[in-house]
Amino acid sequence: MVGERRAGVLFHPVSLPGSYGIGDLGGEAYRFIDFLERAGITLWQVLPLGPTGYGESPYQCLSTFAGNPLLISIDRLLEQGDLPARMVEHIPDFPICTVDYARVRSWKEPLLRHAAGRFLDSGNASRLEAFGEFCEEKASWLNDFALFATIKEFYDAKAEEEGVEDASWNVYWDKALALRDAEALEAFSAGHQREIEEHMVLQFFFYEQWRELKAYANERGISIIGDIPIFVSPDSSDIWAERHLFLTDEKAMPTHVAGVPPDYFSPTGQRWGNPLYDWDAMRKEGFSWWIHRIQAMLNVVDIIRIDHFRGFEAYWKIPVKEKTAVKGTWVKAPGKELFDAVIKRLGPIPILAEDLGVITPEVVGLRDRYAFPGMKVLQFAFEHDRDGNLTATNGFLPHTYDKNCVVYTGTHDNDTTLGWYRSINDTERDLVRRYLARPDDDIVWDLIRTAYASVAKYAIIPMQDFLVLNTDARMNLPSTIGGNWSWRMTPGVANDWVAGRARELAWLYGRLPRPKQPRPEE
Image 1 (cartoon, rainbow, N blue to C red):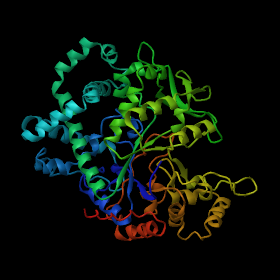
Image 2: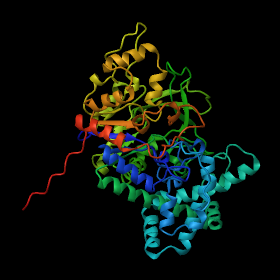
Image 3: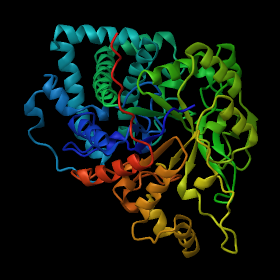
Image 4: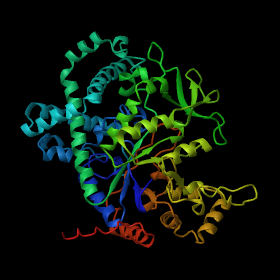
């Protein structure tokens, strides 16, 4: 169960401003934390922090354990001597308000590799020792990931030369490497040891910088909420290294994939394409993979949001040959066994359950068994019937909330609140105004106020809503590829006026942090 009433922001680090084309863990991230402190915001929710692949979606990472090298701060590398200043004398003219991932990668990745090589060749003794300790501590996933990333680079380059579109590990790689033949892996590793070590160094850089940033936030009373997608990417080191834990055939191809069934909005459902877990295999190993995953996440963040929580009660199983989700079936999942095992090993865990979608009493029962807070989204609250009547029992309306929940104006998959309000029909806009008892000249902040005023313990607002931005600042449009995950905040807009207005609401509705009490004298 969550603790005291708090205010939060939903904001992915790639959206931070800066000179290098993409947000990173450098100075702007620290200034953003300073802004949060002034605003009375004590929760910073980020999207998954892993290395992104096709489409740059943070929900389709190359590893569930690794960090995204694109978030490594160039300025911090310069300060620590890992990168010579001459290499950043000519910075490309990157766009200010969006991330051009192709341009960022072509410029930044060579710099990162140079920094990694320089560190290996001439890093100072204390950091090299820390690197060795890091490699030992993270060996359970780091060795496999670094090898996977190196093989992937090799075959991605080969595929580009040959004009091959799908270079996934189980489609395009040499079968001996794809199926992890020991001799083949040893031979490849021997010929690419330097590249493997460089990938390890990049992970060291990421974790070093993230640890310092998180400490800075925690010292100011700000907790980080991380995000765990329930499923892993099909093109990831996770399934490559632990294939026996997933539903695959002898050729390493998935036999079934994840998705959601048809509904009012999508007559064919959604076919996500993620491999499904072999829960029997997971059970035989005491759910150790999941225990390790959650433990690793809690070493990086303070609170975990689990995406598609309902999949722990039952999941939609689609035969891989099906092109849509229509012919899937619901299959029970061992959520109770899993969370019992996790809590037995790790103790109480701070989890927020993303319980949107097809939610049954069984899903609610699983969530409530562990007192995991569920999610409420104000943009879903004002649907109406054919006669224009508000459904007063709609669970997203604030008067229906209980305390143990998290309210958002919108999520990363929603339009911005301003964009949403402008897109809904006249009847729905009228219901919003009547429910709030306000005109719509300041509708976004009125909805923020409504979230803050609710009984929900946590009120989390996308940064785009604090800035009252329109649809062009939307982070993701589900079921589309291209143009997503690229919004960046304009420099200077997270100013004292915004902070002051947010702090006023936090003060009015009891969401400011409690003053620290002096230690009693002995």
